[in-house]
Image 1 (cartoon, helix red, strand yellow):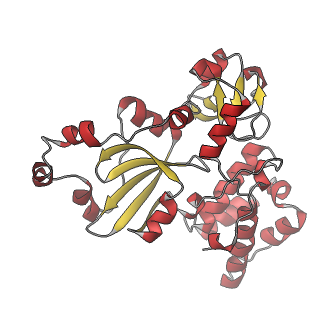
Image 2 (cartoon, rainbow, N blue to C red; image 1 turned 180 degrees about the vertical axis):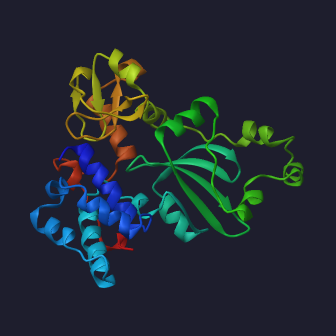
Length: 298
């Protein structure tokens, strides 16, 4: 199975584990994908495919088996796969567990922000409701990140109506805090400082034009340096054309080209990896680089 096939399988399994996929739909998916045998292995595939979805005990056993398999294939030590595409955590310790490995990229209001996970690079739209003491998490795509950072075009945060008024500053709040309006707050205090490595990370998505113009490219996950002609897989498709390069060696979307204005040297790639993939272990394939401990169980 290709890296792309494995990623697709992992994504489907995690959706099932997070209870986002109906059991009947997952059963159909299992029986409609014979290539799963390649990624799961003969023994696990045989057990999975023989699950009786009419028996609750068999389904729970399936979840345990797939959870162990999926955790074993985690490339980075983060908690993103434990979050549904639209989820929430209590304000304080629980939300901070997830935010501890994230970097804030932009702010829409004092309580609506764009964050990106350092280890896995998944981006999230976060809404903090201090009235209900909850942080809302919404998974967003790299294309949506680019729209926010380049055009200030924010995706809609889909939330329960009870949270909406608490995510936007009232005229009274702005007046008490001595802001003329929301845009005044954004100009003065709403733009987080992006460091050199953070800005470079933004150049690793939706960058096909720059990559194809580059003389040399590098991956800041496995530290490989290669010519752009060696790239054979692109993701984030638009109109049938992939826009984000993946590394021809490790398969990660952590590729930079020198046409983007960065210097492709091992020292720089290593510095980038230390910032975005601090748990990466040298010499270990990405699919096995980090074995999660039991704290990731849910």
